[in-house]
Image (cartoon, rainbow, N blue to C red; front, side):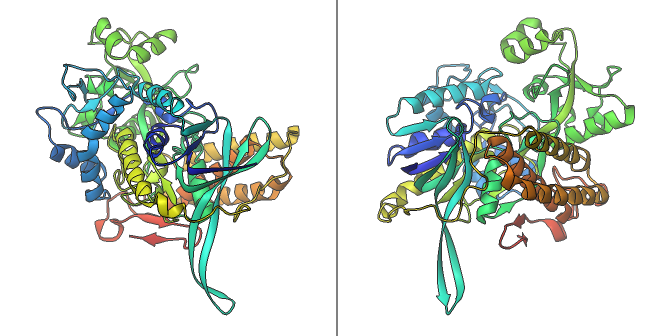
Length: 549
């Protein structure tokens, strides 16, 4: 089946929804999401949105904190644009129905929390469920909009790319890629549909599931990154994977984050004997940036042999904890951990991709009419390490930037007719609803192997030898996948494995290329930051493997 829209949005988190709500003012929008529309990383975000709106704060403070966290790789002009846009974007979220905690009646009179790396209290939040509050409000607004259509349980397979080139004889001297939409697999019917659009927007989130331990939901398999790479788009800085320092350590807790706001309210990291340790690693102690805190916890665990460390906020009253962190409090209590009396067992876990599809200030990728917003994009805001609570802010700011760009171009785009047949992409596997048991074992086995390789060899602390081993393993796994995939019925498990393997391979290659330690990339064989040779992005694409700029 063929569908035609002005805009195709792949992903239903804050980035996709906020773009769709704005773009619907100038055209029709399809939102495609591979599971339930609420199953997004946004929905699990606890902390909030950073904005310098406090009386003792300033844009300059927020800019400087972001640049410091980014460890020399942020684009200053992008940081300034995002930070200065924050108040206006917050007011838009309120207009769409998001209810943030307030301290007064003024338009921007929000209650402000504090998180690691921030010099001031500037985290606008909805208790400890900010993402859920945003997701619910935006979904509600989108469902009421007659120009937006949401396709749940539809998996994006590949982008549809049109090539425009200049030929001299039989040779193409120049080629321009233009995205015309995507091939979409409908799970219920097992059919592949062509979704044509004047502009396609990837809002597919991150790739936390490439690691054995992650705070991300199961949908975070790097689909947008893999699709963009296969289409020839440029990707950048994939070596910078942020590990959140405090994921709940409990056999019955899956992917549950203990918000950085707990440390912002005075929580202390302690070892198994109750001794604080962060003062040994950074002057900011427990409020140091995430890369510092995650490495400190990793070091403490390796030195002690313990399975976890603990986050102690027992000095706060029970009533305060129940009011400020109701979701975290109830989750811990359900597992027998009373935050008011017991330190919370925590470990680092893969949390956020600071690299991604390379974009400009308008969220445009290196392929015409293809945009990327949110965690799947590399905008220049985060550099080598994301400052806490800048991610939701980045999503709403670049959604607005992309909207401004498509608004300028939509009338000229409409002059071009849609292609009659799919262009560059075709279904890779035979379409069938039947799954043989042996094939599913193949998928499950390789999924587990990839995640263990990435955790053990490409984790918080890296070495050249371990990275080389990981690269060799991934070469073999990708060969095996390419050999067996043509015989596997088309299904989302198979596609996620294919995407996961590509992203894992790209992360490893970027990590090997960077011969220094900076931000989230720490290699004990190259322990120093090297601005002379490495103060630049690591950019790679299918067509031209490496650029350094």
